[in-house]
Image 1 (cartoon, rainbow, N blue to C red):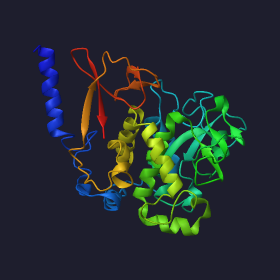
Image 2: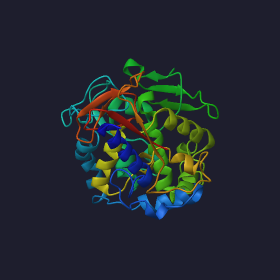
Image 3: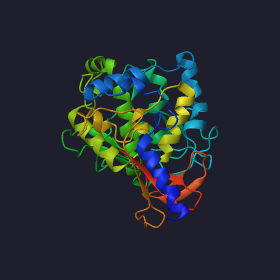
Length: 339
């Protein structure tokens, strides 16, 4: 056996034996309190882990600080704003920051509550400034989205430039009201954002549901499952079709460095299955999450979706979206699939 094969075999065995060692993405024992939990119990345990965070001062201070935080959490490798609602232009941080004016797509970016703040009572901490669901987005597209639920639509009411985002009657079974559909490229991102929100704030969901009618199409009024049946089914599909990307991993780490809590649905791709899906009767293991490795150096990956960047911001290769690329010294490239 060649030295290269010996090296990879030893590495593979080590990965198989140790899994994540002490949690993925340098999370250490952060999720230890959720170990061994299943389904609704796992969701509640994770709530206890991720709810505690640093507020960053009073509400106004923390909300204003988002402009600065976005430069760390939502910068593309080229330094421009990473906007998940519009692809018309590449915004410059600061230069194109919302000034209170503007009436066309591509002029300004603002601070989007991906879970609209009207669903939880407006300027209420800690939800109002929680970076895990706050994103810089095109101001006009954001205004068009308003506080409508995420959904799937033909976009008869509105389409952003290049048909990137759409607004119209919901075509997903179970709901027929007006919905906003983000681009396929980011549907998984928003699904995992919502999984985080209904987990982190599960204690508040009953109050949100009874107090704010706009939240009712998305939430179910209970701590578990938290999401309405049609919304949960759709978001589970979105998460599966658009797996965790390097962008999300890097953003999750950046948010943790700011407010000291994490999104577990990014750290553990497929975690939603252990809470709401086919694995809800399977015990969660925080430090031995199932992992497989595939050599893709010469696999001829097709259907290129996105450039993949490492934690250092450098371009690795262009492959299908969602791959976590590991570069080996021997020149071969592998992807790690987390289940």
